[in-house]
Length: 425
Ligand code: SAJ
Image (tube, rainbow, N blue to C red):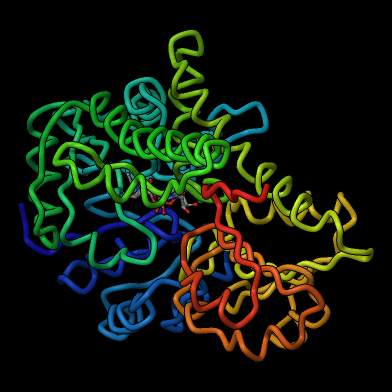
């Protein structure tokens, strides 16, 4: 196998673009393909239109070196990496149309000894039942003339460039030869261990990783609700439980967002709805959290006169990123508006939202409640002593256990913590 490969990466989103830049800065020749001309045009100027630490620098370096170019159509290459979205349809089944069209688009360019890698998170059976039939249209023999594998991405947004290198990877291939070739390729930049298996096992592993996290979070969200009833503090309980060597409880919060945990469990549920009971219930539990938050707000402000105004701090699906996909905070805002609350959203990362107010002091003016919805690092040390002067009712509702209650109470706030029973309720 020659060292420098020509690699066509299909899909230049949160996974495809960093992967393309990583291969390019490690000496490979990369064609980044995206159906969105805006993305391609930005790439060819060395720019990115998504937020991810250091990705801009890496993409610029890759483009400047001449190793990375953008195109709206695929081309002949040694390797094809498919990293397109696999969203969920309204009926909660996987929308595989992007995977299908990306795979179909490479068929005319496939040649003997090419490698095709699916990185997109996909329902079990995708490689064997969806990919292989399309790739077979090339006339090439799978595993002998065309090497095929599923190599699911596992990186955490906000830490993508670190995790692409450091995380262990699973390669699930159609045969041993395919697995070995793909492993050799990823070894270009992966410093974690690389484990080889079959494609179906790799598909299920990826879905299980995010399902494990979703179920764990659902458990602590349920316990948070229970703790409020029992008038104890869930955060202290989790902290103490996690001192046990075999306990790793995650954190409760206002719901689960992002494109992974809110989607991947359904890829299991769609195949075996009667069997995936805990998985389904966990989704329901996490989906309920925005309603729970709104109920608590309604209760906290029941004696406040209309119009009741709320300042929401943060709307992204998790801290220090700009991504609002499936964010439970958007659901909270919608529910609050439906219940007649006036909303100002303050989030320096969010590009646009009808409630967005860029000026913090305007956002809190006349407010009856500050809702700490996302624990962005820059929200840690807000000027609370000035903020409180702008508010009509000084209530702060911390859904993340982010603030020091003693300080906030000392300066005059009524502090509410999600998952902590208040003895006055
Ligand atoms: N969340 C909690 N409590 C926690 C942890 C997270 O409520 O203790 C919430 C977050 O607020 C967020 C949601 O869960 O709304 C998802 O965030 P996340 O940090 O768990 O994960 P993602 O969606 O950004 O990335 C996950 C990661 N999967 C795992 O950690 C098992 C990442 O490694 C995957 O590559 C990614 O999904 C993916 O693309 O599948």
